[in-house]
Length: 342
Image 1 (tube, rainbow, N blue to C red):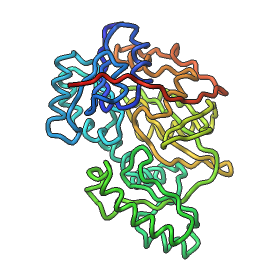
Image 2: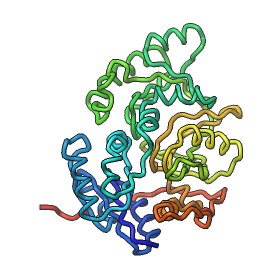
Image 3: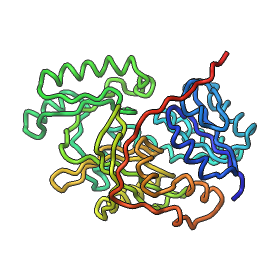
């Protein structure tokens, strides 16, 4: 295998991905982690830790170009929803320097990031999804006409990491939560992402009661579907899967394949769905590695090794797919010693 240097941007707390890729490389390359905070835990496990400007800084893309050249970067992998539109927009100019930017098209990123467009996309391709409304009067009208009922989910239209998601049980809570959402978005990291249509930056959505699942839908770098890897969520913490058990289900995989073939996304896409009364409801798409990926990896799918094979022009990757059902895992925290930077 040729030497590959992999750069993770917005590395944050994804230490597991740093180490999965280091294991897959087996010394034939470096794993670099970049973040705008040198205290980001993932930087500790990386071979090279790099501080970069904010993703919204004019200097950010130029810094990535500098890193590609300085470290002979083979591939860039983003771990942050807010960064995806930026990298997708600048993909061609970054790849012109020799690095593969493993990211989907701007159109796919836009559909996934804008939860209203996600809802419309699922409807268009025939995938069931919760009823969704963009204004308070629309939702109130649906409630009055018995097209919608409490409880409801109130969430940002352009959201990330389950920030500012509320469950409301009645009309008073709906009105209060809706107004509070407007305030919270203005004060959060979602402010810039919501600035294009701040007056329609909140969604009101049907709450689905049932079993919750996560799925890693894997396409190759040309957008061809390779496989889907399912986990039933047994516990959540701070918007991420905390406990899960691996699942193999032909029906669920068939729906995932439809999504993969319609988006032709690049690489891994993390999705969430509910199963209620034998009906599958997809909620969202995250065209990147998500917090649930370790459950897929530990159950037998080695996506880092597959990525490296594809980077090296190898199409035969089935040896890295040993995914088994019925394997349950649980996350735990660990302390990371952070270097004192001057």
